[in-house]
Amino acid sequence: MNITSDISLVSLVLQASVLVQIVLGLLLLISLLSWTYIFTKMLTLGKARRQTAKFEEEFWATSDIGALYQRASGHNENSGALERIFESGYREFLRHRKSGTQETAAVTSGVQRAMKATFQRETDRLESHLAFLATVGSVSPYVGLFGTVWGIMNAFRGLANVGQATLAHVAPGIAEALVATAMGLFAAIPAVVAYNRYAHDTDRLSSRFESFMEEFSNILQRQFKPSQNGR
Image (tube, rainbow, N blue to C red):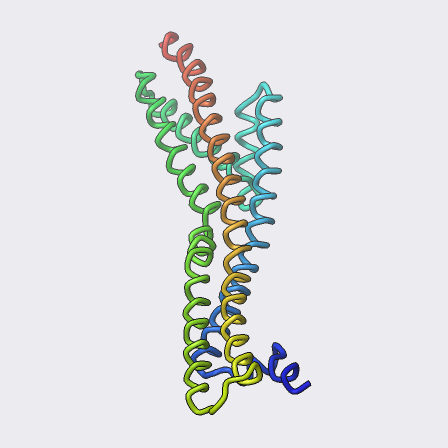
């Protein structure tokens, strides 16, 4: 009965060495931050997918890109990533037309650069905190392993002062070590799963953005030619 009491989870943490308690506290903090980012990214990427699908539907359904641009300009913070990419590209297109640029290649290049800059900012925003999840997934098991090694060392040091080793003497130290291992895995596994999933989702959104940029550049190039020929 005493052994059961000694190896309960709470007592193991409270009776652990200071270094092991620091390791467990660090892993707990990392795990809480990791879960916070996991839920945040789930909401962020879900919203980004919905906004992208909605804008793609609006873009391909409209026959007046200018009117769509006016609506996109008024959305500001409520607009999605793809909508901001479209807005930056069409703004650059209008700037070239107002300046009287005669070369189609110059207009197309300017539009692509503008959209590429916005694309990079939006991609960076979507990828935020993914590096943290990757780090947690790769480092946490080693931090837990460090606590495990230290706990086992303490267990063996304790046996040096005991004439006869029994399960009652060995179990608390070994259990303390295993708690550190379990905590490291508890922090690492969700982070790895979330990172792989969210990295895949981000790549798919980036591919959709890049495809839209190419198609939109072709549309603007065709729109510019009549005005060039009319001069």
